[in-house]
Amino acid sequence: MKNKLNLRLKPKRRLRKPFEGNPPVPGDPLRSTAPAGFNRRVTKKEKTSLAAFLDLAGDYLAGAFRRGHGEYTFNDETPPPDAVPASAGNDAAADGSLEAIAAEVSRCKRCGLCTTRTNTVPGEGVSHPLVMVIGEGPGGDEDATGRPFVGRAGQLLDRMLDSKGKIGLSRTRNCYIANIVKCRPPDNRKPQTDEITACVPFLIRQIRLLKPKVILAAGNTPAKTLLDSTIGITRLRGSFVNFSGMPLMPLEFTVPLLPTFHPSALLRDETLKAPVWEDLKTLRTRLCELDPEYAAQMADIPL
Ligand code: URA
Image (tube, rainbow, N blue to C red):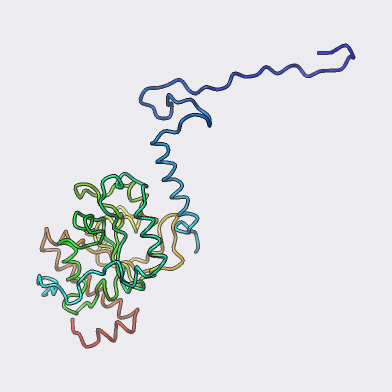
């Protein structure tokens, strides 16, 4: 195109009609009826997923995903002398960073469990534990109190850990107790994959801070989740595995992890007490190798 001065002019660009969104497809959230672009209303569902994404991104930046490099003594129903669970004022809670994680957990809305929980259950115990016990998720008693393993299974766990002094472990002296998910799954169902994925970065951050000498994974859910395995607890239990984090969430150190049966499985099936007692003895032996103070404490206590 040329004008009077014989200069070449660019052809006029036709303005495109602004995009007004995909045609609505009923039931398809990707083809929503809302107009596309920045001016449209963000739905509540989109806000929730954005908040969850930002939370996980926050974890990533905070480092949770950082890439670095005979007679079973717990049979007896009497509680061990110091099985009184640690309160919020124990020494783990005094650690600012563990407290910060607990505070984040209390506000968490990363998955649907936040809509049915009464309390979050971040975990409790000492801040430099010999053993970190990891269970599946809170049940009714834990949801009501905000403390892990306080129901029947929890009382059995306390007796197992102490085993009348033969194992010598407790949440008030040398353990920290936590779960894979920090909120109760309704009707005590198993936590779903998306709930585990949303919650497990909190646990990895706790492990990073606590640096336990050993992890005791109680039951299928913690064993399979932490070991990223499809093998069941019956085959996994009883042998130590080196745990150095999870896919995209590696730790900077390795912790020996011992899978064993969950105490509630023992409440349902007494025959599981024999293998669990074997596992507890294996745990004691390994702790004696790893910790001279514990070894000295156990030296005069025969198994
Ligand atoms: N079962 C678990 O796995 N965790 C608890 O805290 C209580 C029961």
